[in-house]
Image 1: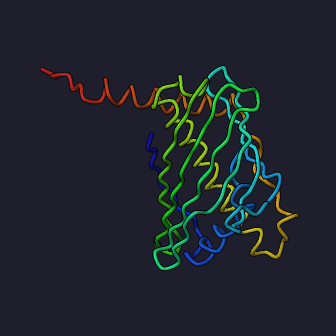
Image 2 (image 1 turned 90 degrees about the horizontal axis):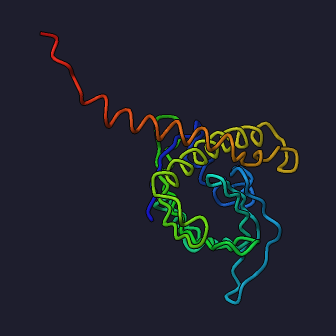
Length: 198
């Protein structure tokens, strides 16, 4: 399943690109994500161990897995991260290839994200619409947290002094995703209808 999203950050392209080079900092901006360790794989490349917790409807999933940068193109300002994990209670697996492209946008930076997501088990029972809506909510929170974090670092705070993203509240995300779904339904069924005044 391909999920595409865009957001803007009111920071220069170079600053945002530099921020994306620091996986622990990036992970700290994603609600529900926690890095637990960094290790070196067989090819001598660094990969990160961690957890991501998310609620899909009535099911709360806690994935434990790994993430690593598989491509980093300085000229194109593109980074590709491969992440995979399994639910800690054995209810499913997730694999995701995330590609982020950065481009200038006025004084800030536009980030275009493509997520190639593969789900199995409990999470796979939910439709593309719900998964896309939950992802959109998380991306908005991620963008806000990244803006705050880059600004704090610019003010001289160390990474340890900058508060990480709050855990992903299943209820809050669910409500926001539901609003997005209802808005989509409203647009689809009501906006095309224009009653004849005569």
